[in-house]
Length: 217
Ligand SMILES: [Mg+2]
Image 1: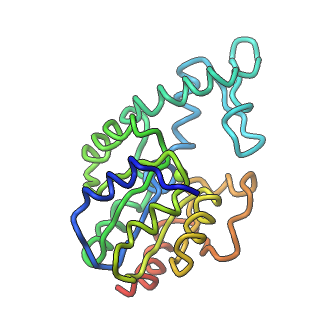
Image 2 (image 1 turned 135 degrees about the vertical axis):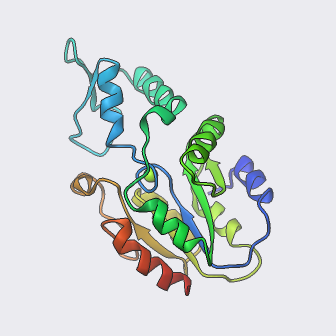
């Protein structure tokens, strides 16, 4: 898996830091996605019926019940992320947990979304009082996790709701502690199971002490 050159460029802009490192996904880890997204779709005349863990194929026109075409779904998702400030709230407990961890560790946000949305997301995070550096990637997350560690073998914890991102992180940084957290636990039955090496956490309250332990803080 190759590195995303734009993500590497963003990493090079970060200040050097050799403290323990917490890397966080954004959607459904620190910002709610799957809760507000159906409300946004309703406002546009669409319905989300999650029979599987995919957006494509599960979005329907309210008026005629027909499935939305792939290109149309992509447009809807794009529009949602452009207007994310209107919809995406902080996942319960995330802000307090991050504030606590940030006293003794570096926190970096790593979101898998097109780079063109980075500024909108940055502005929204700032407005919510979440000043942590934000990186975007259009490729697998593992190489970015490895690059973020830097030259010292500092402890790393990585939190994501997508099992494939945990697998990618594990491939590139085998000693990182990986957490599977999702803002909506009812989705777990639709998701592929998290990998065996991931620590499953139900919410930020239970995640906090486990992350602190993994980081040695
Ligand atoms: Mg996510």
